[in-house]
Length: 119
Image 1 (cartoon, rainbow, N blue to C red):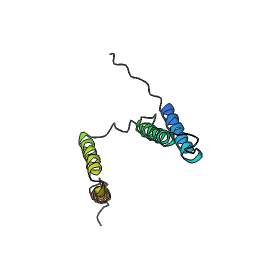
Image 2: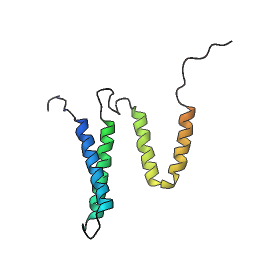
Image 3: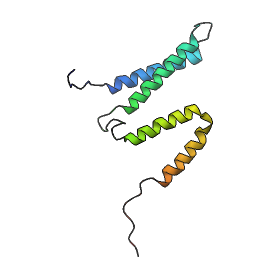
Image 4: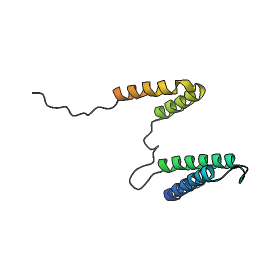
């Protein structure tokens, strides 16, 4: 395999996401089960694919910024995976966990290095 870069069309990924989400909405609100027997399965499939493509669209690089994962540290990635697994195993702790992590993030956020001059 050569080291060639594969061009990714960010616009096409966004269009696919929008079309999938629109089709899911039409299936949910305009089509009855009598008209289409697999309505729930098709709606769920289009919704999942649309949301996944939307997440890919958000993560892809654009002309003005790098890819979303370009500046993510390995420790943040491991912590995110552990948080997702923890919430999946114990969903009742999701809201308190989010509150605690928000408070910790607010307290530990980077401060402005410039200080006001003393009088």
